[in-house]
Image 1 (cartoon, rainbow over the protein chains, first blue to last red):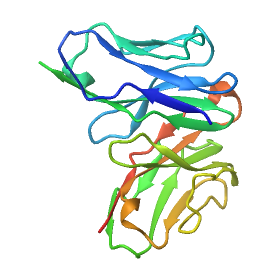
Image 2 (image 1 turned 180 degrees about the horizontal axis):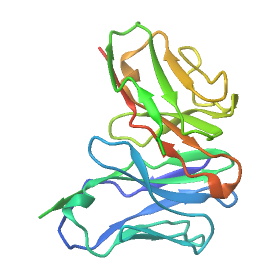
Image 3 (image 1 turned 180 degrees about the vertical axis):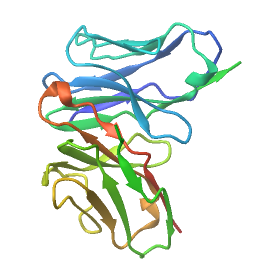
Image 4 (image 1 turned 90 degrees about the horizontal axis):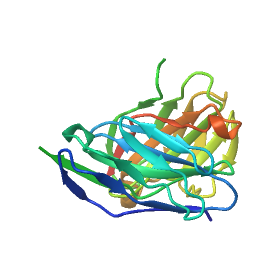
Length: 110
Length: 116
């Protein structure tokens, strides 16, 4: 079946560092891809999405490009802030089924 | 716009007891999901409704878990009897449903269940 694999955490960075969180997927057909974020004590929130190959999703300085040739949707941010500390989940939606990766915990230190 | 509402926020029960969770999705959202998120893992889909019909319940442990969405709006998830390994956060989410472009799911804050 469909699945999502994320880079294992935790990830600890200093403020203003560059962030990459890797995500690859296995799916039949043409899934939609998402990044969700979960801040401490809060529910999951959609961060960005891409619905077809080569689409780039972006929000709050985060970006991810849907790469069908490498089945990847890596999350990037050029300069992280302390407020970006959270757990990030990569997810795909395909054939009425939404699947999540295990999550990557990011801690940003001042 | 009101978000997805869930209650209770926290629940502690003893093993073999029963428990029920309630979810009120965003108004007009046809699709409703229940997920189980065990500590350190990503959410795992338990059941998906489209209006009041079940679309996918392949990962629902049907010997102890049940869910309903009688009028196609609110939903309840029940566990009877609970086991220690059911300790998790139970997330409800909803989406407009239908076409691929409408598949963004909005999540509630979840119910944290501890089985002792």
